[in-house]
Image 1 (cartoon, each protein chain N blue to C red):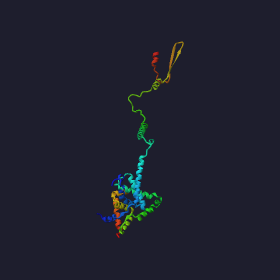
Image 2: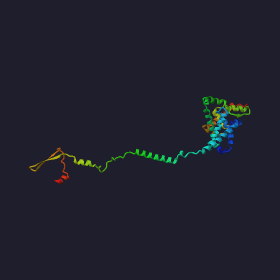
Image 3: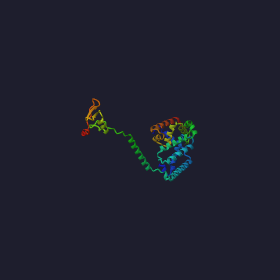
Image 4: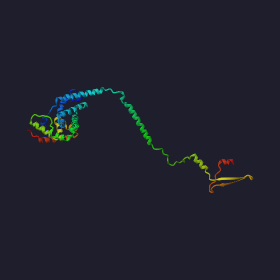
Length: 163
Length: 143
């Protein structure tokens, strides 16, 4: 993909990235509307600064940063932040288009992963980032990202029972 | 193939929900707004009086820095020392002390002249052990 700033057809880039970005943002935000706001702001900021779209780590780091700022911005949310974060761990489901009970169960199992494992899985599976890129987004080493991913898959296999 | 490949394949079959159509139009609008902002920012005419002449400012700052450095060096320079090493030739003495050395009176001679006899009796007055002053050159010549 070319640089968004010099590419006329930004919609092609955005349409390929947006579902994964929204899923990524939904980890911290309860509603899809909030997630769309965050993704819009991150993408526009990314475009405005003329970054290369191949620098996906920076794009995801921007989404993450804006999503966390979004959480803190509102006083009401800030007051409830600890509750919300705890609640997010268990209640906010990534938006998937599920076809059967097996997929719904798998989506629920992903939802129940610890946050630090879930965000690695989301970036790896549905956004196809490398472990090096994931490490760059989260400020952790590549090996730590890989081990979190393995722990997550291990937990999923343990908790997920196909219907 | 790792142990989790089957599970990974099942996860990949889950598709994230697509964004709403409104999101595309919102992003497009925002990008257009940004482009317009950039254009208008380029078109802003800045009055000359607000421009900073960086060359002059730089030269001025450099000159001030040089002055400060010179002043600092001058203030820290130690006072000129008088050499204390003994020299072969004695230090010159000033005129006043030389004159005083010559004119220190050790005593005086008093003379009494008898008018009738035309005889003068002179007597040395002063400390007994004091050396008698030598007549200076002028007195000898007058005599």
